[in-house]
Image 1: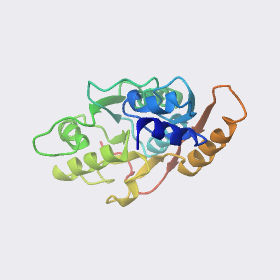
Image 2: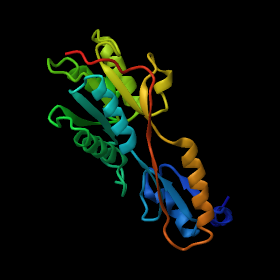
Image 3: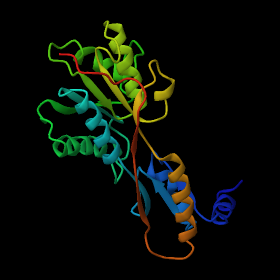
Image 4: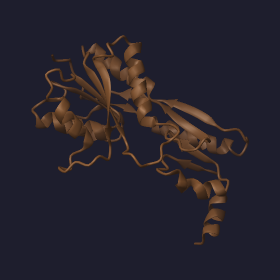
Length: 238
């Protein structure tokens, strides 16, 4: 199919719902065809955006940990390595900032409940997940965190691997909470996680598609996260 034919084909569509462009240049055919683009969470264009609020889920996660006596809590977030275009809306930084706000909101000591960011796609010669690389060091510290909240279930899986590799059991010795509700239920033990509202994302995104035909305004919507409790959280151990 020729480029002009591809653009005509795209233009026949009502709109495009996009979760991650990776590179804004990939969106040029859609922009040239004047097809409305609804970006979900990650945002590269100053256009229609459906945001996901991390604060409600992270607030519930910290409240759960606080009830179990945890005070040394670390948030482990991820970022892509340098060289990729920066989005207008940085999801990973937003999750860390929401964690920091929730820490203050429920009265935890921010010097004990702090955050760290690692590269999702960093190189490790052993092939280990980045969550495992980071946790392998921090969990050996005498003042290691008693609980870790991660910015994705993939990072949580890496932390879980690191914990067991050095003889820590979850949740007896360490509590772990994931994010996204993608892999958390399939891990051992199945982890509590901050869940994205996937059904609502689909519904609201489709509503926004229909709205783009009725308005020339830029559409903005936001949906809350929530906490799904499974295993992985237990009483704090000094």
